Image 1 (cartoon, rainbow, N blue to C red):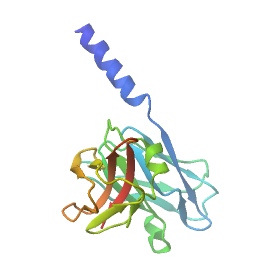
Image 2 (spheres, rainbow, N blue to C red):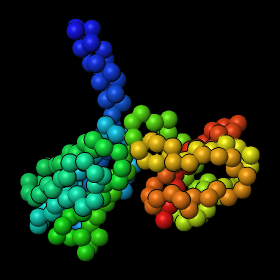
Image 3 (cartoon, one colour):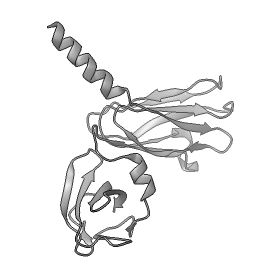
Image 4 (spheres, rainbow, N blue to C red):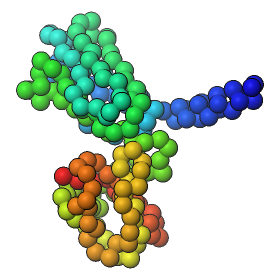
Length: 197
């Protein structure tokens, strides 16, 4: 029994040891969430921090979350040092808003990648313009020479949605709408984020 507890604690510690806190800034003056659309790993924390003293009440309210995820509705008002943290427990897309100021565009989204995943955020950021068109409806193509390379398309949950060989444009018409990552396996494997409309 003792062995099992030690093993579970090691697994749990290694699972969350790489967790990151992602900051979303709340700006009262212009009714904005800054850095409002982010991509994180499962186990990471999102923290909303005020930039100034609120002159009116704002909220951080979930509007669209994955099935089984915990909804959130946080009221933000003076004092200015208040903040709100949320740790998503399910991979997928989380959308949120300031309910009184949604018409002013005070909205945002969190794309939560499944854990564990072989997709590195650095790889995605380096190659985010290599797929076109992006967003796309039926087909995506690549800048550079990738003909004959194997590929895998991952959903944000980390599941493989499609795979094949790049002999030209890749057909994505059967994928559901949402955010995906395509991993091109060649001399230098690359992972590219794209949106299916």
